[in-house]
Image 1 (cartoon, rainbow, N blue to C red):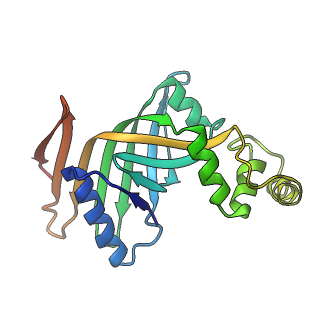
Image 2 (image 1 turned 45 degrees about the vertical axis):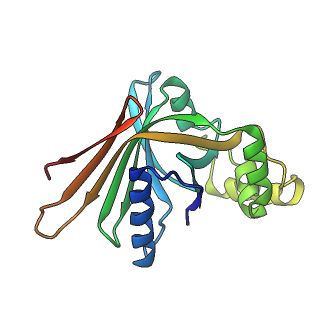
Amino acid sequence: MIEFNNISNETPYRIFKEKYEDSLNANQKIIEAICISSFSSDENEVNARFVNLKFVKDKEFIFFSNYESPKSRDFISHNQISALIYWNATNVQIRMKAKIKKTSKEFNMEYFAKRDIKKNALAISSKQSNKIASYEDVSVNYEKSLQKDNLEQCPEYWGGYSFIPYYFEFWEGHESRLNKRQVFEKKNDEWNQFFLQP
């Protein structure tokens, strides 16, 4: 589930919320999954991965991650991302482009303290994406964290990322292949609306 807080009344945000509710009502599974694509200036390559979109606050889309992960290093080297959601229950795809930044330490601490302690134990114990000898070691580190760590204290290396899209594309698939592609692109603080051919 995605939590909406005082979502913007601007047209693309209203459409996003409508598409979300349609998909939720159609029993979309894993509705919070969003693919974030980033570029590493150091490696000169593009990376993509799914994360869980937790909040839409006003105009901000927010997810959480380890700040020492490869994607975090990508965001430092190149702060422009693309984001993609696909809800198969309604055959809707939403593409976004944005600049990304960290959320505040205070926001991270407040959110972390409210989370399930098992999720926090994993966040604390995992050096995300680092090589490890075996999967068994992951379980051992997790169990140690459950027993020994303060599971309400947010570590410095964990927190949120926020992005405010300057581009939305709402794609609606149809059996006829006459797919609808509606775009909103922000220029000079105004949304320009147009359609793309399928």
